[in-house]
Image 1: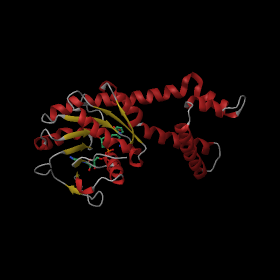
Image 2 (image 1 turned 180 degrees about the horizontal axis):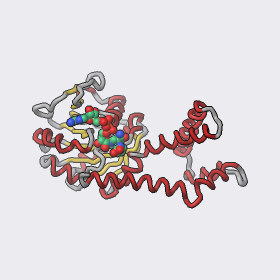
Image 3 (image 1 turned 135 degrees about the vertical axis):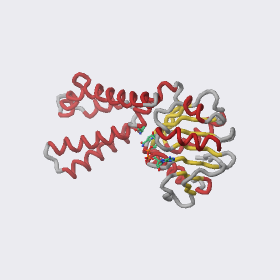
Image 4 (image 1 turned 30 degrees about the horizontal axis):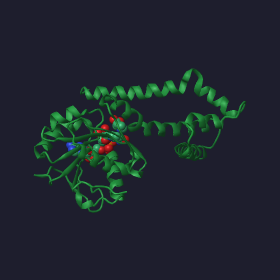
Amino acid sequence: MTICWPDHLFLVGCGNMAGQMLARWLDCGLDPARVTVLRPSGRSVADGVAVVMTYPATLPAGTTILLGMKPYQIADVATALAPLCGADVRIVSILAGTPIADLRARFPAVRDMVRAMPNLPVGLGEGVTALFADDRTSVQAKADIGGLIEPLGLAEWIGDEALFNQVTALSGCGPAFLFRFIDALARAGEALGIPADQAARMALATVQGSASMAARASDSPGVLADRVASPGGMTREGMNVLDADDRLLALLTDTLAAARDRGEAMARGA
Ligand SMILES: NC(=O)C1=CN([C@@H]2O[C@H](COP(=O)(O)OP(=O)(O)OC[C@H]3O[C@@H](n4cnc5c(N)ncnc54)[C@H](O)[C@@H]3O)[C@@H](O)[C@H]2O)C=CC1
Ligand SMILES: O=C(O)[C@@H]1CCC=N1
């Protein structure tokens, strides 16, 4: 994999999410000397990566900024950062519920902007990142930023930004929902009498093995589920509970809709 690294990468915030992205980029050969992280704590990030606690006077030419702080901090960050941004600067924002139009209003000199929604497994190169750019962002910038995202796992360009909160709910929030599922599977096993530590190990390995299998299979997960279920057997009885009145589907639809609605409220400033 040949990656066209930015001349300079300036991370505003480097917590759970941006930290995973940076870790993967460094693993894939990004020179740490090209990276500066702004974080109020000043704590070091990785060998060779510069950490600053306040904004520098200027940004190096050809800087790509990764906005990785909390969404509600955008007003303060933009007040300090926008004066440093010329037309050669590119912005990648991972701020949930923050539309490109909002960023454009705050960074008027910047032409190339990409809205990205990664998820935590990007640190392993097994994440999902949704991407959106409007027509002002150049084709070259889209290609370069797409290339930067590629080593993080699956990258999906979203044609219509109106869907961004929906994809955030699915893949950005998704790991949390899956972690809950693993936990619930283990606790359900425990409720049926399996020792807790054993149930936890078995639930995790079952999900891991099934996800790997589904990723390699030519059949859909729905078909694979039926293949586990022998007619008249145990799995069918269990699936009947999940499937009754589309119970699992309804639960997940409600879950994604609640997350989407929160993204829409955040976009309105709530
Ligand atoms: N956690 C996740 O799974 C995902 C998070 N995101 C987005 O990533 C962003 C960060 O979320 P997390 O990493 O979970 O939060 P976090 O709390 O772990 O990280 C936030 C970082 O921002 C820094 N920070 C705080 N105040 C700052 C300031 N005034 N200026 C610059 N940096 C400041 C903190 O030191 C910290 O490093 C959010 O915008 C969120 O919507 C997007 C996708 C998934
Ligand atoms: O909870 C949040 O708002 C962010 C968006 C996706 C994952 N974390």
